[in-house]
Image 1 (tube, helix red, strand yellow):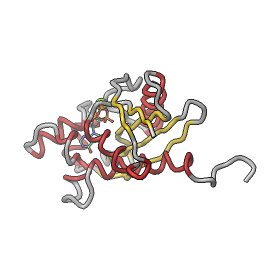
Image 2 (cartoon, rainbow, N blue to C red):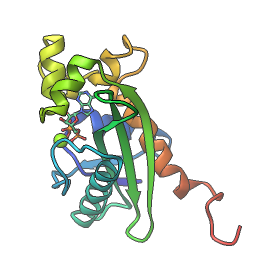
Image 3 (cartoon, protein in one colour):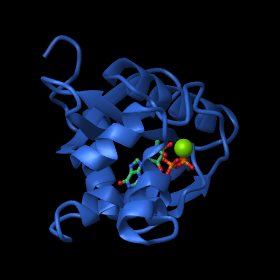
Image 4 (cartoon, rainbow, N blue to C red):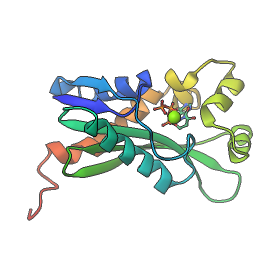
Amino acid sequence: MELAVGSTNPVKIDAVERTLERYEPTVTAVDVDSGVSEQPRSLEETVSGAENRARRALAATEADYGVGLEGGVVRLGATPKLSLIMWGAVTDGDRLERGGGPTLRLPDRVAERVADGAELGPVMDDLLGTENVAEAEGAAGALTDGLTSRTQALGEAVAASFGPFVTGYYDIDT
Ligand SMILES: O=P(O)(O)OP(=O)(O)OP(=O)(O)OC[C@H]1O[C@@H](n2cnc3c(O)ncnc32)[C@H](O)[C@@H]1O
Ligand SMILES: [Mg+2]
């Protein structure tokens, strides 16, 4: 199975390869524009980013499926309780399916800086004293003491958005 992923972030490529291992995927990383801001700030914007990445990655290749993954922050309840979300989109050029990964509340000191306009990746690096944690364990790994990881968390979004293409449960008239 040939897959085009709309990102060159190795964590995203890894998440797709690992989650879809059963289908013996050949994965091509495509550097596409997400069409949304570097740090999406709503569910709608995050999902749009994933959709744009999936469509643009497929359009740039001859792959069977285009996959898009996007991280965003949303406000749940009272300020400044920002949470990190991650969403996936998969398209075969005809249908487009979406699915979400986990939601993790951000610590207040991280949330406050992100609410002031900073991007989550660099803020997490500052907090943890790391370089490019977004390409490693990610906020998902750090904030759960390694109970999950960014790869695993993104993998859940891949599974949720890919499922409709490989099960019969979503077929029309069934
Ligand atoms: O190259 P791309 O595909 O854009 O990879 P990215 O790491 O920037 O990923 P996103 O654009 O999807 O994420 C939007 C922002 O949220 C940050 N982010 C998302 N998930 C994260 C995580 O688990 N850990 C750290 N930063 C994260 C990320 O670094 C960006 O600043
Ligand atoms: Mg980005």
